[in-house]
Image (cartoon, rainbow, N blue to C red; front, side, top):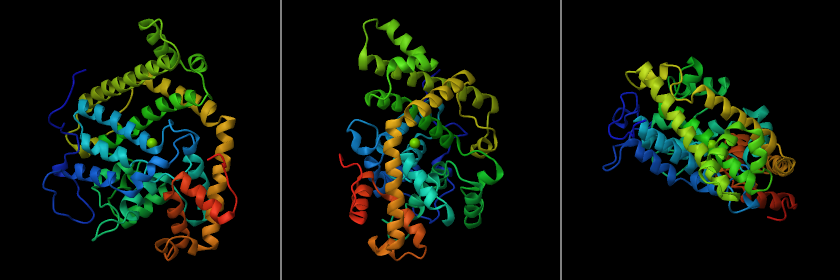
Length: 384
Ligand code: MG
């Protein structure tokens, strides 16, 4: 593997050839368009709220667990370092990574599931779609338009998944736009593909760390059940026979993370060499070109399955997430019954139910708990 850098590959998204913004703007004097996107994301309100949003462990359970913000920073770090080696657009990767979770509700997946359930008869709720809604509409900072007016390439990466029904709706509003690929079955840019995998690498590694930190998992348990962990733990101990405890855990995770990134770079480089897409659109029409080799892919799937069963489904996690689901449902009912309890922009919106979903989705964990207590008179997670 060579250490990359320098000029962008022909199949990278070149900011000079961006498909542009929905509302045309003069170029910035010192930054290219994707750098400018990244800066707008970092300055957004939704980005600051990520610090108080749950990744797996509810935000108040401890100060050392990942939040959506630290998760997003880890995704950006992993994505950028791979992008540099593959000669992809590092700024675009960073922008997509920092924005990829902006639409997440409070309380992680439990909150998202609860809100999706509440919205079932009202057009549904999908967090990737909500991330796009945040950057396209809900941020209100600029005089001439709603949202952040990001480039096509950043918005394309933010809309990672989308149901066919919603894709058709977006396609009707924006023909040939960011939802077209869900209709015609093409891929997003290589930068967007890379962020999706950096997301996977980041969360499966940091959830091991947080799972052990919380006491819900042990390294011994992981070692026995997950070949990928066993391999790197054995390597760490062979190199450092005296290593134990948290340092052994960190060294195991560090080796596992590095190897996943190297595997991704090696296999993606080989696929790119073979397919040799002439430009960005040729890469979009090709099968996915960014990916792991088959043995690593299989082991990552095993790791994710273990985390699902043993951590995300752990009775102590489930007990908390059940309570979080109730908070979201009761907030939803309370605002639908009394919209005036929301700030004016939301209370006066034409589509009231969608405004309730937008308002709840934007909340941090702790704000949701305070609002829930104010509206119902009941405290949930009173240890908070
Ligand atoms: Mg993520």
